[in-house]
Structure formats: structure tokens, C-alpha cells
Image (cartoon, rainbow, N blue to C red; front, side):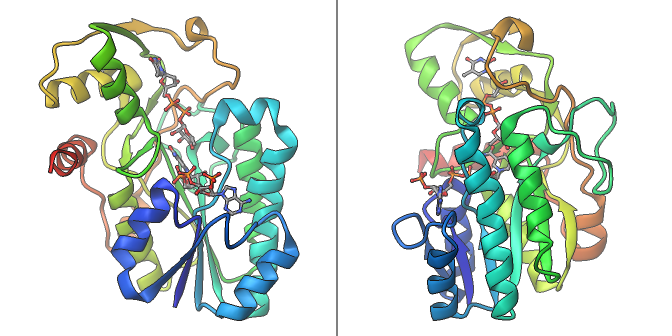
Length: 276
Ligand SMILES: NC(=O)C1=CN([C@@H]2O[C@H](COP(=O)(O)OP(=O)(O)OC[C@H]3O[C@@H](n4cnc5c(N)ncnc54)[C@H](OP(=O)(O)O)[C@@H]3O)[C@@H](O)[C@H]2O)C=CC1
Ligand SMILES: Cc1cn([C@H]2C[C@H](O)[C@@H](COP(=O)(O)OP(=O)(O)O[C@H]3O[C@@H](C)C(=O)[C@@H](O)[C@H]3O)O2)c(=O)[nH]c1=O
């Protein structure tokens, strides 16, 4: 059995759908990953062969003012899962982020490029990556710019704002790869099925700025919204973000034989599904 921790989150729900009867899901009402006792009780009782940790504190700006909570959930929580999954002989799959990088490389990041997080969220997720290694049988899957049917995300924010305004300003100096949680779930399943270990990058193909992403969302949705350019500095959010955080996903393709579709195709498929 595969245990999905954070099964009610945006990624967690798509993982549960994909894995079907092979999966069992738990979320905050069943398990608190910040508590070693809670993790021990659930994992020792359920004895999964694989634990996928999709639970996290994902409010990037919120993490700046709640540093302790960020480290407890995204850092220490993963240590608890690693130690107990090791104890019961299970593999740990930890989901991580492009925000462990500073965005200064200027070309797609490889798995062994040195991380240097700019934000508290990024620091806490890097602590999670390091703690995942307490279980030698671990898989760290870094992804980015997620959207899906079951959670707050940029696509849904844009579509909501477009219902209220005819004109929006969106940053055009951050580059990355928008990634559909369904494609990420397929990548995670492929990595588990092939018995892969270590660190992997998984994101939809190609890249764009948030501004271009917004323009394509409105074009695909048939909405005539003007999207003005703006810089990250002008927007002035609390957490610094990497300016160029595209992930090189070649290792995923080589080792698991899986290549996520281009982001434009994924977006089309998502919007079609959303309309049904
Ligand atoms: N969203 C994105 O753009 C990206 C996400 N990621 C990573 O992907 C993973 C999944 O993200 P996403 O689906 O967006 O996350 P969500 O925020 O949608 O879901 C996270 C889930 O974890 C639960 N949770 C929070 N704290 C705890 C806890 N202490 N114990 C147990 N469960 C808890 C949340 O419950 P509640 O809602 O009640 O707090 C929620 O159900 C995370 O590791 C994230 O860091 C990586 C790159 C991009
Ligand atoms: C709503 C809005 C956002 N933005 C900008 C802010 C931000 O830089 C960018 C995207 O907004 P978000 O709030 O979705 O961004 P953010 O919370 O930074 O998204 C990140 O989440 C975490 C969990 C990750 O791990 C990352 O990979 C990434 O997906 O768009 C605008 O410029 N204009 C707007 O009207």
C-alpha cells in the first residue's frame, strides 16, 4: 500500500485519484507530521510500503512571518516521516520545490546544482530535503508552479480576478515551468514503479514568465483581459522569489522513461477538464 500524507491537498487529491485502490490517504485530521508520536502511530499501524509526503506549509509569503511553523512542518515533519518510514522498511517520497534555488544560474537547474534558497519557505523545504535522507530509501521530487483542480493556485487566481477586472498587472521577470498536478502525479508514479532513489526534477516541458502564463490562460479561456507587465520588485511581496528557476527534467526521462507534456498542452487539458 502507498500512503499519501497530505491527501486532501492539491497534489494529494490527484495522487489519490491516480493511485486508486493501491493508495490510502491521510491529512491533518489523521496525522500531524510535526509530532513524532502522531507519525509513529499512523505509520506503524498502517505499515505502507511507500510513504508519499505531499503535506506542507505552502503559503510562501506566510512562511516569512511564521518561520517556526514553516520549519516545523516543512523541515522537522519530514525528519519524523523519514525516521519512522525507515523503521518500518518503507520508501519515503518527499515533494520539494524550485524555491530551494536562488534563480541566478541562468539555465535549467540540474538535480546536483547547489541549492541556495532566498525565502523562509525555500529554506524550510531544503531542510525537508536534507531530513528526507534520514531514510536511505528516499526519493526527493522537486517541482514548480503547480496548479490543479483541488487547491488554490495561479490559474484559479487569474480566472477569479478576470471575473472582476478587465486589466491586471503580472510579473514578467520570473521564469519557470507551470506544472499540472496530474502530470506531476504521473511522474511520481513512474519514479516509484521504476524503483528510483535520490533526487529528481519533474515539471511540465518548456518555460515562460508568470505574465506570459497569465496571457495564455486568458487566451485559452477566451477572455479578453489586458495583462500588463510588472517587475517582482514593483509587486513587493514579503518573500523573495528566484527569477529563473526552470528545472532540467532529463534525469526523470532517462531513469523513469517519463517526459511530462509541454506546459501549453497541460494547460489546455486542465481547462478542458475544468469545463466538464
Ligand atoms: N503549490 C505549488 O505551486 C508547489 C508545491 N510544491 C510542493 O508540493 C507539495 C504539495 O503542494 P500542494 O498540493 O500545493 O499543497 P497544499 O497546500 O494544497 O496541501 C498540503 C496539505 O498538507 C496539509 N498539512 C499541512 N500541515 C500539515 C501537518 N502538520 N500534518 C499533516 N498535514 C498537514 C494541509 O492541510 P491544511 O490545508 O489544513 O493546512 C494540506 O491538506 C508540497 O510539498 C509543496 O511544498 C512544490 C512546488 C510548487
Ligand atoms: C495574483 C498575482 C500574482 N502575481 C505574481 C506573484 C508571484 O510572483 C507570481 C505567482 O503567484 P503565486 O502566489 O501563485 O506564487 P508563489 O506562491 O510564489 O508560487 C510558488 O508556490 C510555492 C508553493 C512553490 O513551491 C513554487 O514553485 C511556486 O509555485 O505571480 C502577480 O504579479 N500579479 C497578480 O495579480
